[in-house]
Image (cartoon, rainbow, N blue to C red; front, side, top):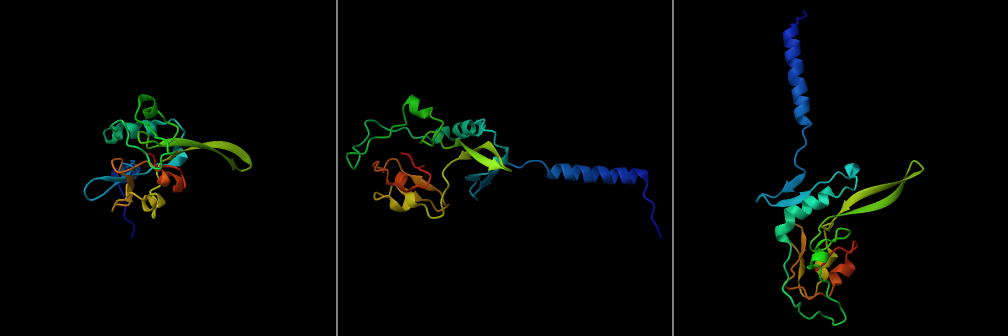
Length: 176
């Protein structure tokens, strides 16, 4: 026994299916939040990165209030041969080509070979938040440590500037 579908029912069902398909394609915010609402991660589709640095600017705008405002003169560094890495002046705050206390995201470029053809790709870089971060384990003063949510942090009010955390980081990321 075949049941006839009216033209109206067919169109109505097709419209509902099309709307459901479109709604499932709406991009969701690309971030993960903890139970308290604190943002824990940002997802970046590197296949779509064109190196425009819009993500760098967005990161700087969102995190502007978190940037350190160090008091000068800086305390004496230990050991004495370690130079002060001061990124707080106007010139240092504008650096975009590496990670600093005022630039938490940067774009790196690499030349790769795809199907026998060399091409340049761009990709955003930031702290990799290692599972077992050597920077947090090595600091002799306890300035670098891993938070319970998995993020390594450096407390600038405790840091004496020895840069041991920077030396052991595979990506040379920690900055005071």
